[in-house]
Image 1 (tube, rainbow, N blue to C red):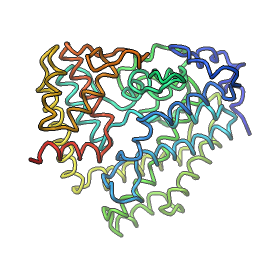
Image 2 (image 1 turned 180 degrees about the vertical axis):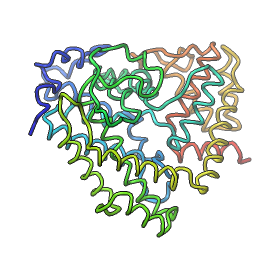
Image 3 (image 1 turned 180 degrees about the horizontal axis):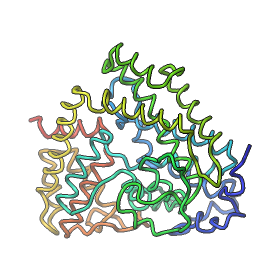
Image 4 (image 1 turned 90 degrees about the horizontal axis):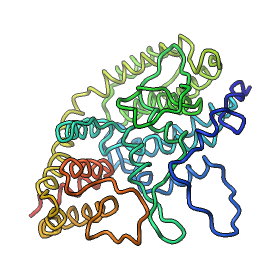
Length: 401
């Protein structure tokens, strides 16, 4: 039907120039090479080649189950969002290159242990430097400041993604309501996002990814809960009454909502579901919250996550001594060789230390190692990038003699 084709982000759209703007121009391709990719294609490939994206395969979606290959991880969730948003954007006539680029990067800032890890890191960051931690803001921080790629000369540089993709990453979080989701008009400074869901995305494509993100997990979390034995047969029967004529199959549930959204959306009214489908979303969320997210079996795991993250933070925090901090980290290698060496090496990417070889870098300097708040921010950033298994490995190093 392509009923949104006229508002797609392309060269005829008045938002085009802002959408493809980069903070710093990308380095040129190899001399004589034809540039075969669109601006958003380049963002897509830059994102999937960065380390933070690669680590998503070992990060929790809802359940901490690293040995079970059939429990959804963060990378599977990202792939689902990419697939769903592509289907919606393609049918409506929007720019699928843009939705693809936003989708693969939308959760790049997620911490280990899913939303529970996010809550724990936020408690640390609010206590230590008066800032809330939330994954969408951290995602923008990662693609703007932390993730580095080597250029053709082996020099490490920032990703420098386009405005539309960066906007889609930070604006994806937060629930939508029944009134219809529309993009905002202004290309604001994205640093003005100081809480989750404060602004709608700048593009219709960003709005599609935001809704696809909400669709993707509804049935998948239920499938995982059944496999983890959190749901009884009685619970399953209750769920069957929540959405009639739809069996517990994530593909069926996704299809139901995608078709309904495409039927009921318009440029005038925005991206929206029918009243019936919107009510069904509320019912599934309520069911999942009651039967899954608040389940008693989850609580011991949350306490375990809290200990792991806080203990690693304290070990690194306690070596701080202004300009002597790096030396103290190196001394710590005697007791914690993996943690101390890898954190000091990681720091050298982002601050001026004796370990940094300036010939290897052309990226932002974002920490002042002699500033305690900066140092605490660096620890939180480092922890947020860890995978579930890696943070467990580091914690085991702390407690083993």
